[in-house]
Length: 395
Image (cartoon, rainbow, N blue to C red):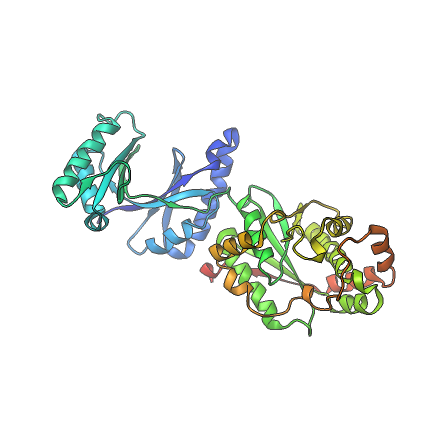
């Protein structure tokens, strides 16, 4: 049986010095978890490369490749054919394994990386030998070292040699679980799922809090958020989601607080609630999808008023992003089509006609005194519901 393997190339992890092994261990653990339902695989690391090797014929290589491409910490990935470390075997494997793309190509070149310095041929010699063999096997081909249709890559490593075409770009970043834990305030919009994805890319293990306001928000809106987290979870892994009902609090704010301050007062209570959930879940920071100046609650002054009650760091990875950049990322990670579904979320109900864009903190604090916010918040948190969100690919 022809042996095929998936090679995962590491990027930033290789620069971690003495901590590199710890990062690799977390990465391998994450990969093994993602591959559980794709079959039995051996996953191990050598020379800045992670090897994903099927243990039997039942392993689903297509599914495994797709999932490996979404694991943070992998900068590039490729399927490769394995050959004995013999020059004749290597060139034969190149022609056999890459037959289809070579038949479709008009130009090619060969690049070789010889990690095993004991192998008797140097990289240029291997490239020349393999290239000459391929020219004989595929007479329609010609060599183009500058802009080839396909690059045949040969890697001579410790145990075997591997032949493959150009690697695909991976998810990048660093492994989830190496950057601490963070609580993301997740809504049904475009921004917060992208912010969650970006922080997971920096190794943050995610917990999510979602604020609902039934009957003003529907079960369909809640389901939309679940589906967004499933998409983010394809990269970030499983995510615990805590849903907090803010209906009574929002109605009190609507009825008793100054109208122009409704939005910023609501945001302050959201951050208070999120902080308490974060503390219960062992999270060290809050994460929001705010972009400076995008809406009234995202001006510098409004953000300062909300941060005054945060009690812990608030990460805003989109703070300097344009909407077009956010949309592009949402499309890339698969959340865009879900985010644009027309369901209300609690941030868009009871919106004042003329919100204060430059609120002053002491006026906001005075406005909050019209309600017993602490009691309402405590009641909402006592009734909060939690569930585990598994990525779509693991359901």
